[in-house]
Image (cartoon, rainbow, N blue to C red; front, side, top):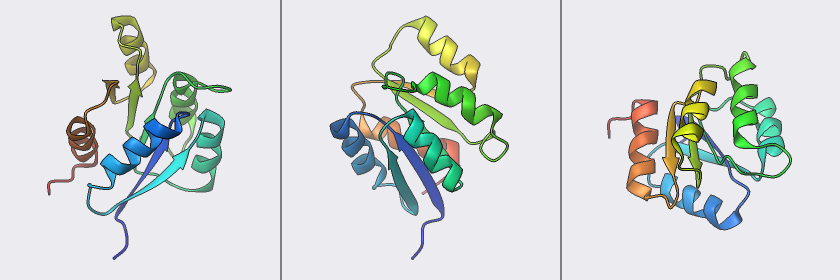
Length: 127
């Protein structure tokens, strides 16, 4: 059975990325592609279409906010839902991310059910 949805996880911490991929493996019909920073994320976005993107903010080379900016001007992915997953919990950071076009903002430490619920909500998956 092939996946109906594809997800890009952009996270520089291998442990955190593994945790997200494991949580997302519980979403039926979701294929997950990993990127280890914003530049790698852009490379993966250039190579294919994704239905949802999860990104950290604090990453080397290109941070998650710059990535969101680039996604929103990309004609292929400009409407793709983006979830920010970060340790940055301040009101200003949340406001800035949402103003740049993120659809949701989740602070670490993450709870798998919360991430799964948000992904399902944004992809309109009912099962």
